[in-house]
Length: 488
Ligand SMILES: [Zn+2]
Image (cartoon, rainbow, N blue to C red):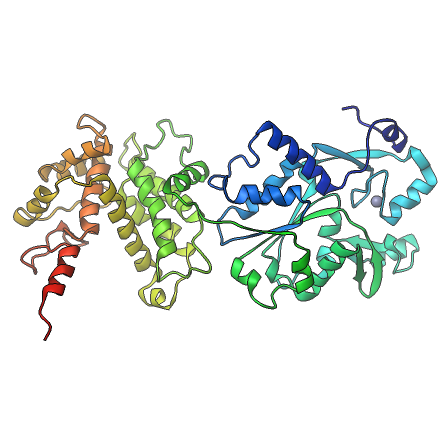
């Protein structure tokens, strides 16, 4: 595309004024026709969120994404930039990206009056047409819309109320682009009114002076659904002007969740031998997030972000990497114990209910890891007999190895438990494979049995059999026995 240098040149071409919402709409229409992916890298929203967002854009709506934390809301909004033209012409030097054919700021209008069609033009790339703001209660009209600048007034010899003295705010600078406000309900009522006035009439009052700015902006928002629907948090006329409400959600399937985590987590690290992350390790990590979202001790209104499994996986790999470095091993192969070592990446990612607070975040997290391990273990070892291993602990004794011991040492220990390492075959790991992988598999079996309360584990004895009870009673049977007990 040949770039115009002046308004005259622009007029010779086929440029015409298009509003930002029309521009997004027509680019979306092209994408839909060509069946190109609309939001590359956004996983699991193809049948839910993305069609609704597309409809909102086709309708030329301002819209809001309602969802709990870590549901890719900000990411989706940022991806909207791809629906803008690569670049657009604007009046060179204009602070609010004025359309050369339809300038709204006073400075541009004065310049055009002077220079006419010779007024110079510049081009604005789409990346610079997206402005984002996190709403907090202390955000002011000056931040969002603008302020009257007495210094500017004095220097230019203008009256304070002249539009030439305005120091523009974020929304104003987003003219002809997308303006995103995260956590909209945190915005003070007064600012919401200002926002509404701009959306409605293009009129706004700054320090009591009326200023007319018919901005062209696509407004998009995010909010926690409960905050948004709570009475009084959003002024009604503003709510009324938001064309579509789109609800986001956490990944519905473990597979989608694992895809997201694998995509986002930093695990390769440029190591000569990349870490070998066995599928069951990934599954347990992902299941932790699913379990945590169901957990009564965790506050459901704030949610459990997808960032939990992402940072957890990163820490799990780090713990394995550290162990390999210390022991001078080549293979970084995370184990279940590395997940327990990753507690610092988890405990900050959920808000506790009262009952959870009594237990403490670490204990709640440990409990959840155990539940997740049990779930994944049952899936992989459904119908695989484990009584031989349980029996070994009954008859022979305990198994303990130091945390961070080299794989070769742990391998030797695990081999003592008859039949334990054979179970790795159910996970697709063969006896000839790297001992680090066999160790990871063997530890998974032990952790699974521990999670199902078939064997015990503590710091003193390691894995062992609790001898206070003559025989370990599986959970289900325990319940059945209780039911069979006669009432007295
Ligand atoms: Zn201007």
